[in-house]
Image 1: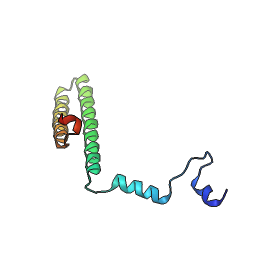
Image 2 (image 1 turned 180 degrees about the vertical axis):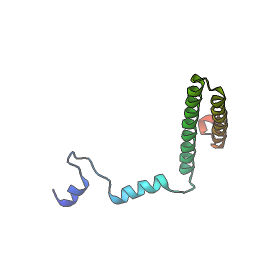
Image 3 (image 1 turned 30 degrees about the vertical axis):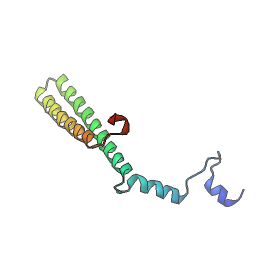
Image 4 (image 1 turned 45 degrees about the vertical axis):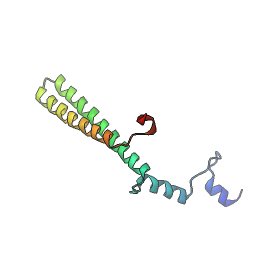
Amino acid sequence: MNNKQNESTRTNGKQLLTQKEVGDFINYVFSPDSDSDNQKRQHMKRFICDIQTVLNQANRALEFAQKDRWSIARAYLNNAARTIDSLKRIAREVPPTANEER
């Protein structure tokens, strides 16, 4: 085997990414391009983040309710409701797909 092949192939035979391929992948994931794929990716990231926030807020509300601290639990639920409204706005911003238009 030559050195070039040793550099790009692991001992188990799987190919490693070249520096250019790694750079292209990083640019694809983190690029601020305004193409539709990037917009979809940004919407999905925001949607997932808000879903996780709602789950955390609901869990905190439950913890405080179990400790009989209802005013704090209610505050967490109010925050969760606002986050759910944000989720609805995000969902409205996404253009319908061909399957949804039927």
